[in-house]
Image (cartoon, rainbow, N blue to C red; front, side):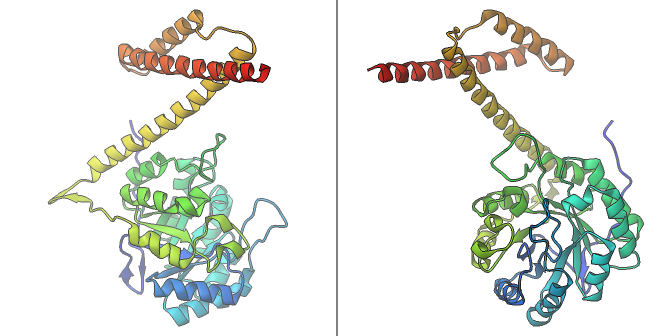
Length: 373
């Protein structure tokens, strides 16, 4: 039976009594560097219609010696942003001290970073520091793909009386590298939504991609999956950024991204399509993972082709083929799949693998012949 969670006691995220509407856009630099940089970026973003300004004041970094944020010195700059642009302000907090400082300087929203979410003691410290406030709190997924740990963080904040909660999906660190900085693993936030349906989910395409060229693509995919909004890093001049330069966009570039987004309705006529959309979204995500796995499998087949060429081994290994088919048939039955269906798929995969190895060996043979000449 699917795990069911006791519903959190949540209320909509509001500022001054006004509820945030989809899509929520939060933007600003990875790090607050100087007052001039903060104000220049904020002014441009405000002119483009951004309502919530984010900036890293404290920056938990992997290695000591990297820029770890300007610290409390930057909080008066955030006050000035709020005063002069009318935007709401958001910062990351990792300790009770950060929370107290954020409250002291009138920060409107805080978020808990991926590294902090992974530490229940740190999350509890922050929850205790926020007790008695009505501040909206967003929680990033932990670094590793651990849904229970992520849900636990929401439960800790909710038990401390924090009701304006939201999730930030920033992707996950995985052993196998992908083209993105962090693997989206979309099924995890989809499952989070199934388990806690009234929890808003914001996508962080900056940290998922690690590359500004792909932010548009991931942003659109998140909205197509019915995410509630986006948090995107924007800097007046990304090339001069003190941290994460490659994943930041200028305010002008950000406007091009947001203007190009297609906001799809969540209904078919008068009928909500929430359940149907979620099931289709899961299929889309799984299909993408299947294609990624097939790509990796063919890459290994290429390496096998090279190994066989270097060691004068024939491409077709009948005994190995029989072992694969018998093993996959048995596993199909274990996973309650039609064995004939699975075998038909593996026959196609094997045919493609043999073709790939043959191509590699022919290319190597041709190159070897040309070298002799």
